[in-house]
Length: 421
Image 1 (cartoon, rainbow, N blue to C red):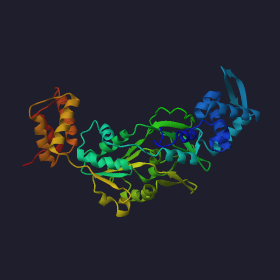
Image 2: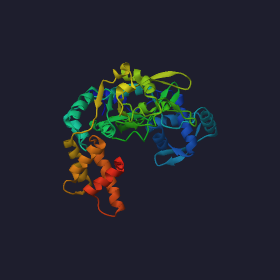
Image 3: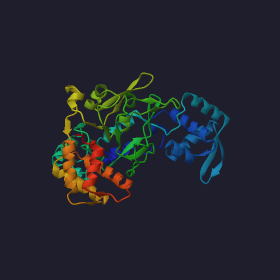
Image 4: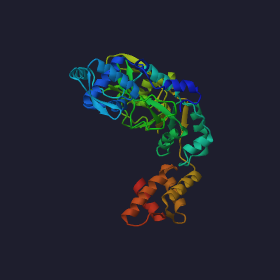
């Protein structure tokens, strides 16, 4: 499903199956190169196998096949059912070897940059966010009502946000579950073409397959759930730029481009090798104008949409990380703080139920009191962390895990450290 207000006819036209070469939107020579390179690598191949590899309708692959056969670049070896079995002729092999010297990319046929830009704009998030949808997104968490009241309007605005507050208050869990408010699919191209260069876009580690809507049959597009990419301390500047594959000569799209039409979470912001101000300066224009500019190794630059919901999760105050000019471009700054005793008790009871544990009388209340005394406040991570420690204590002692006062004390000593006189 595309943007909820996109007219059906415009959606269909964007993904209409190409019947002729000129409908692909890329140069014919590029398509012919990919055809002969795939055939060269495969040795013996069929039209159906090439159609699957090139991500083209088999009728169009047959047109290319007949074109190359007329140029004596292909030799037909027979039939496999209704399908042609063929190999490249010596002239075809020479051509493929020459083209391999220029580019070793042998992936699907790309879509044009303009086609990609149009699709991403059409798929920009337009979803109704209300309490019911937000409650569904966080159904496995205990979220204080006042936090829901602040998250809701921020999601309606669909602008980037800071989630800040002490560590262990659930900022990462809140950010990662934001994707649940969407129940539609988006189209992601396997690759795009820019000035003759090919950029790989589809990443199976990021893009989870989804059913394609009826009438959307251009096989160069993969239908996926809206993507969600989470990065932490490993984020470096190169991840936000085009990377050229030395083996194939093709480029790989940066992380935030792979996340287009989805969510990009920067966890523990301020703890990266990449300095916060360097990242913020890199994105000050994209966040404001919804467009980013990427540079190829030749030095040429081109624009790509920046339709990404960026979430900065940090235990630092936003004012320590960015200046006023940048903070103005992120209008939602949501404090995720320690929870009240009532909410903490709810989290403990849910954790007990989810694990199927038994609990001694007063042990849950004692856990709260210990956490408040030793930790200084009540953070949502404490029940999960304590229960893991108690589980390991029980495993070591070869007994069934149970919430007891004694085990709470033992867990507290391991978690907060031994009290000294």
